[in-house]
Image (cartoon, rainbow, N blue to C red; front, side):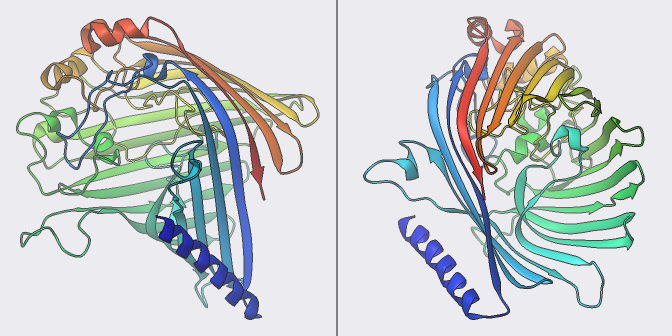
Amino acid sequence: MRRLAVWTFAAILALGAFARAEAATEVKMTGDARVFGVFFANHNFTGWNTSAWTGANAAAYNTSGTKTEDRFQIWQRFRLRSDFVANEAVKFRLGIRVEDAWGKGTLTAANPEVSVYVYQAYLQFLVPGCEGVEITAGLQEFDLPQSSMFNTSVVFGGNRMAAFNVKAPLIDKTLDVVAGFARLIDTNRTYDTDTTQVADEMDMYYLVLPITLDGFKATPWAAVAVAGDSANSWTTGFAANLVSAGTLVSPSMWKNDQNAYWWAGGAFEITALDPVKFYADAIYGAGAMSDRKKSKRSGWFIDAGVEYTGWDVLTPQVFGWWSTGEDGSTANGSERMPTISPNWGAGNTFLFDDSQMLGKESNMGVSPIGNWGLGASLNNVTFIEKLTHRLTFTYVRGTNAPSAIRNLNNLLGSNPYFVMGRDLTQNESILAANFDHKYMIYENLAAVVETGWAHGEFQESVWGRRLASKSRDGDAWKVAFGLTYKF
């Protein structure tokens, strides 16, 4: 890893030197850094670890409640993005990242393990003779559509993928088209492990049609993912978000070598009544519909929110969501909408992995799928110049039948498919609050404080006495304080 870091930095310096030598090429660098400490008590509502996938198949996982938490950590992240611009029509982006906790890996004293990650690497250009048609090819950040109140997509958002993306205007300033192909996983790459060919890839195709009118924006979209049964999608977390609970019981996994998953949805924003603004999303997803009945998965997800932006001192917001949950049987497949990598949430809520600025040890990791909820937020609260606040309350309750989760837990024991506090039954709920603050020390330097609290009620008959009892020993809460810098 040390050699990799040296060669990465050498390549950047060499490209920079070459760019300076070429009059037609310009190097533009942007980046950000954050350093923060976080005190987090009662991770996962117990202070213990949850079960997690540890290998390339469904049977490789550890169990919950075998490790105890360390409540205080200091995290640091630095990201540098370099654009090598030949002209206004062509550029290459290289983004590198260093991130770890103080005293760990790269940030260990004396003999650190140097780890520099490439998190962006793509070529972007305008097609000659086709006004406004832009192609982006390579490792790039990507979000499927979601209305802006809810951060990014509940299906795939806040993440990166290697993709070929085409964006083109159809009607000037009114209708665009975005289409592309992405390869999320290619486990064996050039050669499979022996002379038998296996389906070791996971690919995604997508189509987005953003429509912008005066006071109204609608974005219908569709996506299809084709997952192979030999793709290592377990340790990435993709598999658990896609497959049904019945897939894990005998006969395990799929009948098919590959299964298709698809989604169709729309994101909507209404600003015609400004300063009152409305937001909504509706999505249906399904997958493995040609496989065994127990392996099928399909469901709905709907969210909506409204905010008032007419006051200078604060912006009140209310929001809610609902998604289908498991019925009482795993033999007939799953009734929860499949996802790949969600990054959804409103109000910077402590429950979901969404918009936290200090984004390590930042939330409770609750799944937005298989539950419903309501929230209210006072956003952009400002009484003192350069100082802003946000206060959010969120309530969530499950839509999953207790027997569906209980049956799988009885068969497998502690498992990472259903996790207490992440997946809720119809009889379980969580109440949470977060109170966040940001002070702009300079134009690009901010001091940030993010706090969170959550109280959960969980069924002993579903999760067992040990975990449910431990969750009643104390509520979960965090305090994070740090500095963020952008340049």
